[in-house]
Length: 317
Image 1 (cartoon, helix red, strand yellow):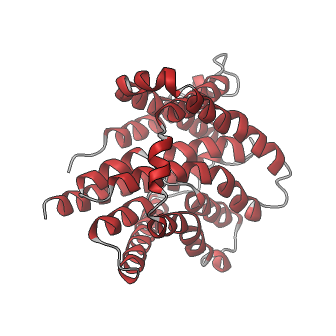
Image 2: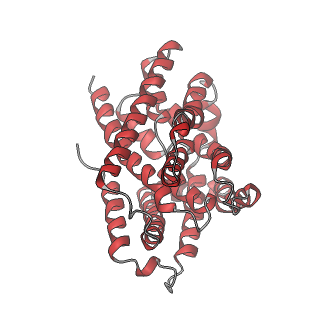
């Protein structure tokens, strides 16, 4: 299997942040915060241009499948991670656990879910519906999950302010894109690959900036290779736990093969786009955002690699 180029780009970005932090440092004359904010709004504006209201309406019929996917995304993931909470006894472990919870509370990803479901010969229209609606649900649900467990000392966590930022940064651009679909849909379809590249560049910019600050604050100074391997093992265990639980639920509900594939593929995915954006909005500047993003980026790499293998095998059956 080929290694996803975006995963390699993420690794290169983190290395660049370590050796060349000048552009992302607090004293940098380049306004990366402003550039990143504009870039994020444009990502969701183009997302609105590409979002099909007709497909969302037609997708509502298969409600059991949608319920399984959304419940897996926003309930099953966080609840499994919550079971580890009683075993957390230090501040470092608390931050790491919080980063796992942040991962668990995020919505599903759109592009890779649809592509992988298509390769595996699953229910593609249902995948499009669930991946699209998941991002909109996450705007409301993800901050609520995080508000429950952000340390009380973090006084900057204000839900009203957070939702205001989410409305301005995400919701308004999405709805503006939907309103302008009549004029911009053909543009979005024609330049689909270029817009995907733009999305990834914005995400890499945010990752660069976040890791520059984390390296400046020595967030990872106490983390060893063994720690990273343990985190990786826990993430793979989390993925397979969710994957097989969804498979069991799908068989219990007597889903057909196509619907089960869609449930397992969409229900196990987490969006790196939403994660990087939400991390910028949800957490104050004093928070170790690089640490918050670390499990998400590792999970992103694992989910693409594992699901690619499974999709290829199912597609050839």
